[in-house]
Length: 127
Image 1 (spheres, rainbow, N blue to C red):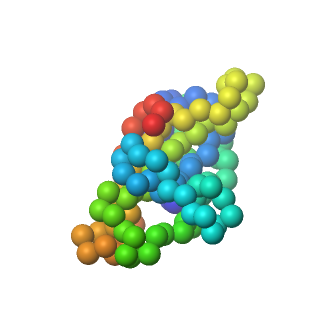
Image 2: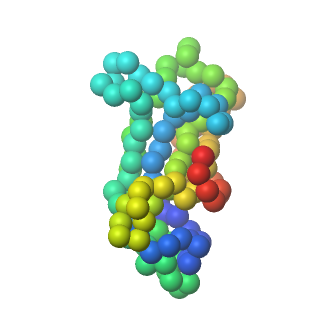
């Protein structure tokens, strides 16, 4: 994960975390791995502070996120990565809440895991 650009004053002041999970399709259930030790395979970034001013252009994450991918035989064309931008609980916000989300395909046309640098827009609101 590199950065979230264009946040400016669209986001309130506070700390934000980016969650990445695999879903079976857009709007579908999160994938579960029985041997991974957890119910859901979700990765998250470290909390980043945003001051919420118009000249604070974005959030810089600059970190690597790793997830388990299903084997090629179990790959389905609709599987995708779901990104959720979550505002962390603070004195201004009573609970953690999703303020933006995006999806990105996990596999290409030949069922290969997509690899490289990509950009995707975040949609405002909860999933």
